[in-house]
Structures are given as structure tokens and as C-alpha cells.
Length: 383
Image: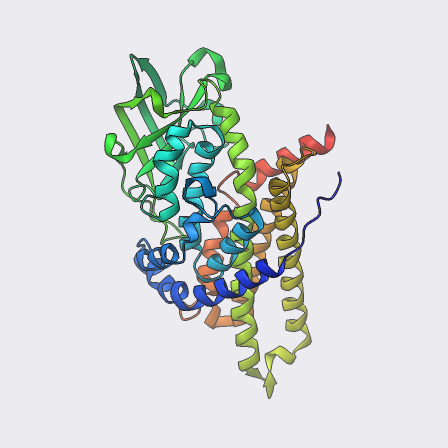
């Protein structure tokens, strides 16, 4: 595998610096309350809209900024460093719109992408079901053609932003006899009859609403079919390949946030007459945390650069899986060590490291568990 060249430009660095200041001032102050109350971080999201962050991943032709993937990764990292729930709120609309950007008609693009870019609309990605998470081909949601419409029936589980989103990208079976080749993709407006179950009471990402959604024979116009019938599985996998690197960035941001808190604490906390930052055993811990986080960041940027360069060697599926796996495992390890470094204080809600640790766990699970990433990587390596 050849290494696709990448490096942060001065523009990237300036963006990172300005976004870190923004996140510290306008996102971080709301993070603890969103987590405590399990409430959508509206103030943080509104501030992100004011900063035009939802527009980053949308093409300029549809009202977006058309930013490269490394810029989008920096955004995900810096927002997650302050509040992982706010970060995923921005990422989920981009995830849901990737099928629209890459496969939908221009009419659908014109109708919805500008609204996502402006923050007027939010979107969710409806792929997983109760018995069809990692095994996407086992989904039971059906879409039956009826004149100029499809009749959509079924349910999706673990839907990020459920009840908040205005539109849902939904995958459903249109040909039950064709297996994964019988899955199609649709863009469904919330107002057409999407029913939202009570929100899950989660361990982490508590400011990001997660719930099941269901469809009781709702009508979806044929114009809202994304791509062709039977292309849904391909669309879903193509989309996840291009979204996993930003989940890696979210994980890196969570890890970096935990490191920053731990470093500040170690400089102030004294033991045996000196700051604990002078204790060699603890210095070694923070050094390893920093090394692992930088390795995850670099691999994530590598995956992003493949997207920016059009993935000429077909490496994205593998490198994206590696980035997501390494970054999420790193986030879990680093946040756990950060709690340890703060001792009893780390175990309380007086410091955010326990929230970082709880938030980190989901990055090992969603958008393909890390066990699935191992399967993807091994298949490539073993041919």
C-alpha cells in the first residue's frame, strides 16, 4: 500500500486554533449540563450553526463550504474535545447526507443539502435494526412499490438524533428474495409519519438523543429513492467507509480532552511535597497517552487524505477501519488512565474525565464495532 501524502497546511492550523477557542468558550460550558440532564445541547448546536460548522461537509454548489476531510476531522476533534455529544450532532447530519451527496438526484440535493448546510434541518441515518446491526443484510424494514410511492413499514434502532432530525436516510428491503442486493435507500421526512420511541437512557453521549424509529405504512414518494433500487447495501457501505474516519476524529478529540484535563491537574496537585507531574511513574503514563493519541490522529488524517484524493488505490475501507479501531481503543484507554491520574477526583463529576471515559465507549461500538473492523482488516490482509 502506498502512502497518500498529507500534511496540515497553515489554513488547517489556523482553523484548529480558532475552533479550539470557540469550543472552549461556547461549547464546553454547556457540556456537563447536557450530560447530566440527558438533554440535546441546543445552545452548543446554535453556536455551531452561527460558526457555519454544519456547512463544512456540504459541497459549495448546495450552500456548503466544501471543506476537505482533514478540515472536517479537525472540526470533529476540537468539538469532541469539549463535548462529544455536540460533535456527534454535527457528524450525524453529514453521515445521513453522504448518500444524498453521492447517489441522489439533483432535485433531492437541491431540496435538502442547503437546509442541512445552514443548520435549518438536521438529519439521521437509519440503518441498524434490533436484529440487524452488524448483519445489515438481515434487515426487515420493507418498502413496497405502490404507484408513484413506496409504502414503508418497519423499525430502526439506535438512531442518533431521533426526534430532533427533520429527515431520515432509511434503508429498506425492496426485494426480499435478493438478499443484500434487494436493499434500497430512501430519504424520509419526519413529518410523513415517522414515529419516535422514548429515548434511551445511555451511559455516555447523554446529550445526544438516541431512540428507535418506526414506520407504519407511511408513503414515500418515488422521487425520494436514493440511487437505484437494490443499491442500498452498496450505498450503506460506501457511506460508512467515508464516515468512519470522522468517528476516529471524535475519539481522538475525547482522548485529547482527557489529556488536557489530566495535564492541568498534574501541574497543580501536590504529593510528597511536589507536583505529581514530577513523579516519573505518572510522567510515563501521560507520555504514553500522548503517544497513542498522536498515532491515532495521524492514522485518522491518513484515512481522511484518502477520501480527499479519491482513494486511488482502493485503500479507504481498510485504512478507515484501522483509524476508527485504533482511535476508539485509544480514547477508551486514555480516558481510563486520565481518571486514574486524577485519583478520587477523577471518579467524581467535579471533573470531566469521567464523562470523557463514558463517552469514549460508544466510539468502539457505533458505525461498525471494533470487532467488525478486525474482520474488515483481516479480509484485506489475508486476501
